[in-house]
Image (tube, rainbow, N blue to C red; front, side):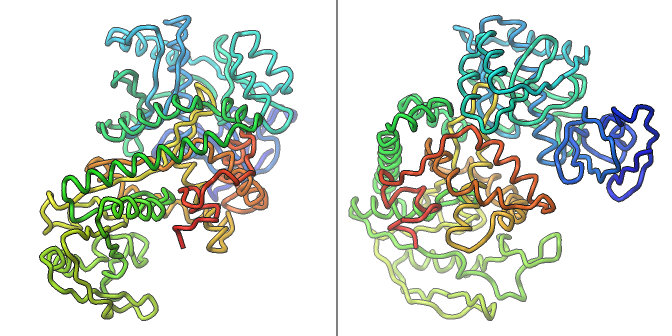
Length: 552
């Protein structure tokens, strides 16, 4: 008899084989009607477990479905596996690369030596459907590193074999599905038949894969074209090619050889060159209002300061105005869905006053700016400001690209910039590094360095940050006039030195433990970079690790 506490309800199972126990997938079938998404993973006594795991003792269990970030990751990763298998069946010598996320989906490329066609897409879909309908088991086997390296070398996956040499610990999990063998650092579902809804279609030079929708699991997610975001990913790819670093393996080799200084200097030169180009456009087009928006930990403060310097080189004298000073009095602040004061709502800003002040400033009038008192929750009188024509106004904040914020300002006066840290680095062809993970790692390090926060505190607050981004930033990113990628190809190796001990101190009983363990699994493939001597004091990464001369 095994007693399982599933979401607070005790269910008792009679086990015929004490040695084996009961399979989580069998338990999941008993409760799947309670979940609106597809169950893909389980939390057993605060540890993530795949559904083909056997439980042999009384346990606390929570199942995760595709409405949960961890559950969706497992579903998407399994869908990626089915896609890779289909391509390998159809195009024997092709190289399949899972590149990056794009508009609710995953962008992939199939290197065939020729452009892919609509007929290729139709064949891939047909083959994927066949793999799914045949419900092939996905079996995981644990090998020693030495054994795993030998296996991958024997099937010609030498890059994967080389990367595994860097992995922490002495064990490697290898997945096998209908004679296809691969290594994934994250979890998979028990069989291919668990994929119930998906979509794929040709996009630019590759393919977009769409997993099950969070709103309705029976239909795939909806693709909304994001050409500007796609182009910035392409730019990141070009930058990677320029540096010769597109995988963790090559980065590790560069760090071990001591040649990382040149990579750091190239990253800084690329950033500097593009910021200078942005400043030139602002000057040429005589833009008076510069709006900067970015999700958390994108390096907005460093970017804004460096842009100001380039604008001064162009004989402009920019000034910054803080949106925080335009908060309405606290009693007028809207509430979020949990009944808390929602300072991230655009209605937390006195929009009428803000737009009037901006218009008056642009007309050359003297303006008494407000100053928000965070202690009293009241708006007070701030500085008096008057500007001339060579003084563009820099406004940075989460609502920078929302047209409602500056509704009374003519569009030809505005220049909108969207920043994000879009990592161009992947572990290998089949294991991508999510941009969100890079930003979370940055934030954990920064919060610990400058705010006295533990990693546990930052991880616990991250879902709230993400909700704010999904609501207030991401819907408007394509409205930007230009996008700027603040990621540094070497930074995860650098940040590992800071974050690893912070994550390791999180206790197993903490609700942040699962996320901490997942991040550690990602970082285990990176060689640490602990030499900061080549990183200049104006570098964006300094905003997170310290030593910045432009961020206070």
